[in-house]
Length: 317
Image (cartoon, rainbow, N blue to C red; front, side, top):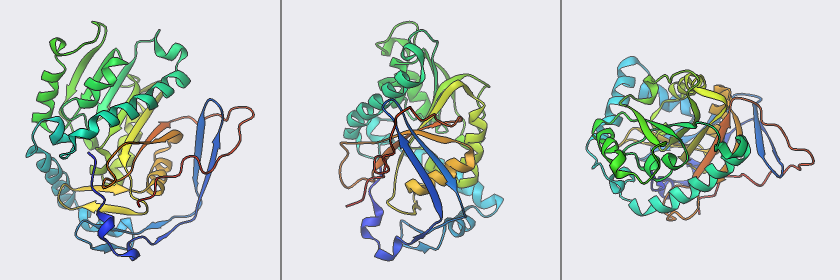
């Protein structure tokens, strides 16, 4: 869900970051590819929503999920937060229901580009299947995915959200053809889910990955890679900090920086195929970025030129 930028109220020393990271970006007329190579381990400083500062993410995670009981509590409290939230668009968007329209518009433009570049005839002659991770009440599926995919599976750990999704996506409540449907509803958390092998063309992960600790983030994507069809890809859409991270003590989630994400992608064995910044959100919210991630190294188009500035994360003003 979209979040207010806590860092507006933190001291300037919240931003220190030390890294040795080589990022090569290339962009061609038909595709954008970015490869990330971690040369040395980096330390990313951050803070929590109470203003406490951490020298690095390892320090924070050790305190939050450093043993089995702490990790169990982390995930239990995260789901518990959402169990008290109304199953409505305004509820799942944290009181910012009005961002639904620009969110779907931005996602649809990004998805259209990916379908055109990754699938023959934009996938029209292919039985397309998507997985909506952290699906909530089915907002993204109903407004976007089900219009482009023949089948959409929904994955959501909050039971009353998933029940609302079943109702919202019942055939009588949809304006799509009989060949498009919400197929399966899984009430399972991300860190425990393993998809059926080779089922999905696109695995869509939006506003939920922040609930996973780094080790579970990596484990999830490594398992989920097996759920992709050949040529399939992930779309990750998330809030970003300018640097480092912000831990939300209330809902047990972390907002990461672009650099932080790229290190995790590297550990997952994923490659950034294309990115896009979300537009049209209120300025008090964190910037939001979309990443298209592939298991194969994206090919550089002939005659393409590097444009290192093209995909820099937005700056918090």
